[in-house]
Length: 89
Image 1 (cartoon, rainbow, N blue to C red):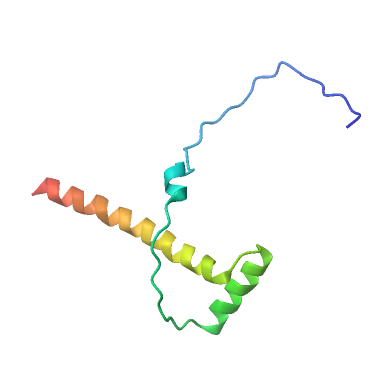
Image 2: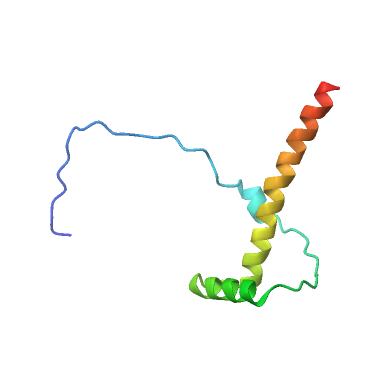
């Protein structure tokens, strides 16, 4: 890095983003796992295996995270809907 940095007095365009990182206590929490037998299509398994290899992880872990993400999305939505319904009664 032999080039010098040239600083200017241009306005900075800052944008506030939502805090998306979980707190440390959630990172340390280990959820209890349940073993299941699940038959998936060869196409799906091949896809996850290839993606897992690209990202240096386990394909089972990717599938588990996908299912957990689905549950988080729809579980929160149903909780909000049920709270709205209770308020209207």
